Length: 163
View 1 (cartoon, rainbow, N blue to C red):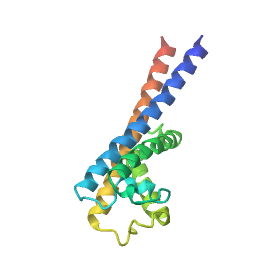
View 2: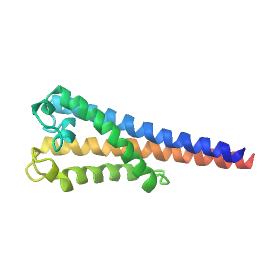
View 3: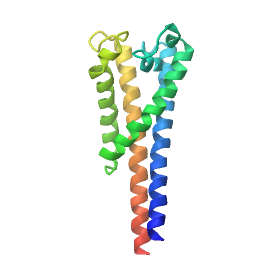
View 4: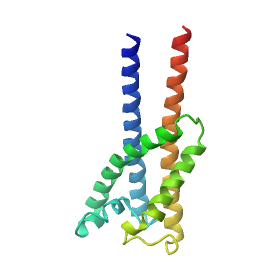
């Protein structure tokens, strides 16, 4: 019976990570769309579609909304990566560093995929600061949510064993 409860609890934790990843991706890419719309950034959520989608539709509102959805789905994988690497650390710093690292991967290493986006050296200061801030807050959201949930479940398990 205890084994069955542990399996259900484990499944619930996996579901929580999935929801945190999806909601984090949707929320912060939507805020990124608002920043793009208000001209704080020259890069919007449709950036994710640039290497694969054909046509100019990807630069319009539809492209940004589909980009938000795609980022939400990809963020589920990002949340599981965070869970594997940093979930045991109950602090805000791993999430902040994780978000900054994601930003560096996307705008530094993966830049050749996004030909229409300016390189880091040529990007304007507003876009640099806005995108870096969004990635850092996204990493913080994912990181703290997952670490908090991990430590809550660990505490509950210890209390259940002691009772």
